Length: 210
Image (tube, rainbow, N blue to C red; front, side, top):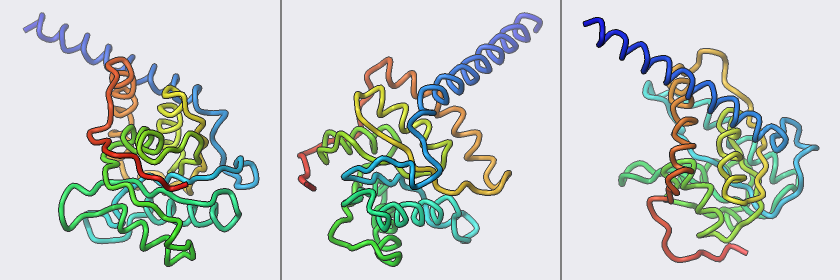
């Protein structure tokens, strides 16, 4: 029993170190590419909006989603980019994040002809890599909350891409403990994916949005 207890303690310590180290490296590696002020965001050709569900489990509007849509619309209205990729999960027939995002952006005044859905953005890595390998973009502005942008921009930089993050308004503290915990684990997973050369689940034929 004592040996089991020591092994458990060792695993907890190792996990804590991995989480803390991944947190520090990702924050440090992305900090010069993230912007809260729209005036500071470099002009680009393309906005990449990272998907999430428009509603939480209770059926109420998801603030993560609403704030991302508003941020993407603001970027476009400010003339920071000419086209938008909405990348998200489309894993079952009645759940389609890119379609939800497209409708929301159109309602906010973004022209439908410049919005390009990416239906295979199952993970952040998938969305970032597909923006380059499928949609042909090497420089783009990623839109999400700051914690998410840190990870997405770090991945993009490690893939040799020129990515900036425009931080959507954050949600109130304690809004989603589940998201906070999942992000800590996702940051550790970044380094596993990079070390193993992880690729998106689907690539397919290039899509010309230029």
